[in-house]
Length: 54
Image (cartoon, rainbow, N blue to C red):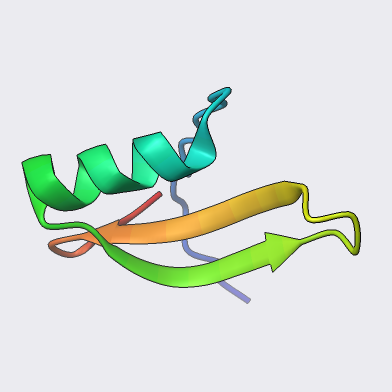
């Protein structure tokens, strides 16, 4: 069985909401998924820019 090979970058930032706003304005990023803890802490957000996901 053949599996696709890919690199998935992960960016760690202090201010998630500011980062999302920046990526939307600068690159037209679209939010695909957000995982949030019950405390409100954002674990991760998946964004798409063009055909790339990060």
